[in-house]
Image 1: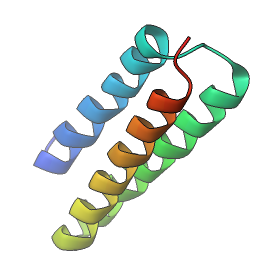
Image 2: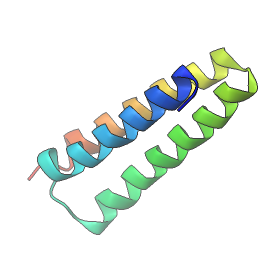
Image 3: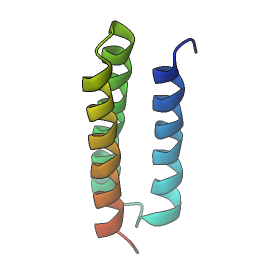
Length: 76
């Protein structure tokens, strides 16, 4: 991990895994929504490493907000 985008996105992905197991009903549909957030984090990492810091920040915030909404609506 060489950039701060690597650290932020990997930490966000680890938080997704933790949130899936701790705060959701563990259904396949919920997992697919979390995979979508994970893809957004991966894209944000690539965009941030390419130099578009503002767009990467927006993507990270959007992915985290979407994951929070999904976790809130799929509590057991």
